[in-house]
Image (cartoon, rainbow, N blue to C red; front, side):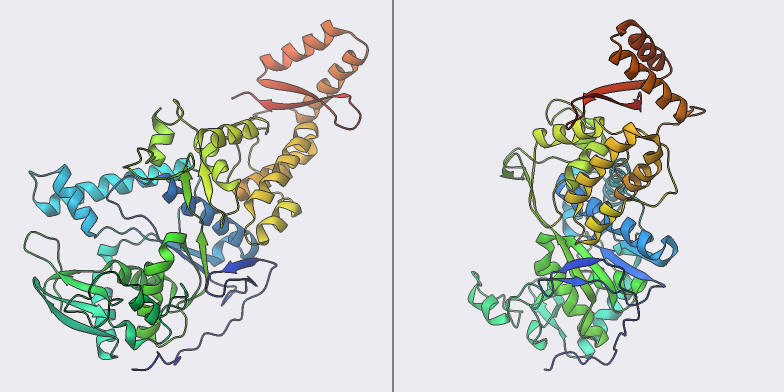
Length: 479
């Protein structure tokens, strides 16, 4: 069988606006040019709602939220479509439902698990300062589309029905696609050589994967030409992304662990079904998250959920604000691994404490921060530039609008506090007067001004200028 024919070509008519991204498909940093400036399209794999999201899940949500904000800034908020799915049909969900609600019918138990877990996910990511995606499809809303795509793959010779001990299932025929393995850079011969178990009797090749499997009467299922069953995991994202973004779109993102087999299999399904040579032009993957230097796992006792960090005291003996967790994630480049630790959270918290609280601004963000983000989403460099800007804004009220707009672009602005009718020029004037009293060694008058400002909710922070050694004072609204 041949590779999919590129019967549908996608012409890129978008504009390059300085954004460069490292494309996993090519392993190179490339100029990002969207297919169309009128609809820049981004898809990110979301959670499987069988358990509360852990901090490893938090990283792609935060990383791609920053990308979403950046794309909106570059192309306009009305011209970016961001899709992040929810997987609400999965054998892990079935197992959790049976464990947690053994006295309920399975479908009712599944509904309880998915509703509770999805609601917690939404609450968690909102606390992390993440914007809602444009669309958040659920797998169970797209079963008909999955059945249709599977039928197309069978008709085109890329899938087959195989008998199993429990009935039958539909499998994707990886040998039918010579380009299979292009994302992970793993060819079929390598996969066969690396196989550690015998090929199941019903599979043509060890790499063939499930598109549809039959369900027992006690399992959730939908009618199909191959019997009552449920979809495999990979087909879900192929169908949901096509429904909302088209057969070929701009950017597909997710964690490094999804490159193989999930994203590889998405590409295979989508390209073979649609007759295209691509599913997405750019593939982005964030690095792994370790906890205190070790791989996170329940057996290690270091499995930490977002909810644990935000609402309980079992990590470092305290709860952590959402903006601290977000900043801790962004202080490392998205492609690099993160060692998540109490020390790291404390570092992020100390940094945030030095930044002034401000109200939203319509100003243009800092060009330095924008340049960092346009260089392969370099949030580490962007945070450094924002920190310098925060110091300038604390000393010079005229810099506050730019600082505010820049912090909003990264989604790391401290909790917004209404400054009400405060006269920013008057505050700065009184600070300058206090500094003059210090020069004159009039400590009493300097303390009087400080106390007056504190009573009005203004916290002063004194430090020394690194070049002149003179006292400088910044301020923030007390939280």
